[in-house]
Length: 93
Image 1 (tube, rainbow, N blue to C red):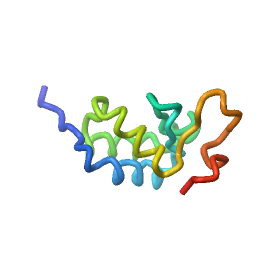
Image 2 (cartoon, helix red, strand yellow; image 1 turned 90 degrees about the vertical axis):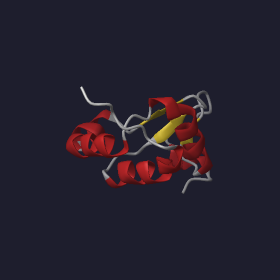
Image 3 (cartoon, helix red, strand yellow; image 1 turned 60 degrees about the horizontal axis):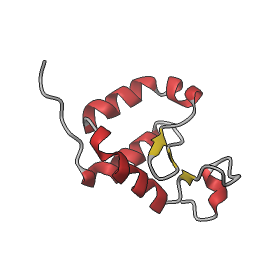
């Protein structure tokens, strides 16, 4: 099996943009996790998400950096905040 490419931290904004353009509502959940979108979005974008994963490579080790970036652009939900969608934060982009 060939070595899988590792995503660079500098690729995070482009990765997030591609996921959004694929139709997924990516957002951080708290300070330590994120989701690509709801299950229906992910199923509809399955092929494109596969291509994105192949293009950008393994990103698991960048979890906290991806979460931090999503938070800086307002795409986050804090658990227990009463916010049901990241766009309700008031700072969303």
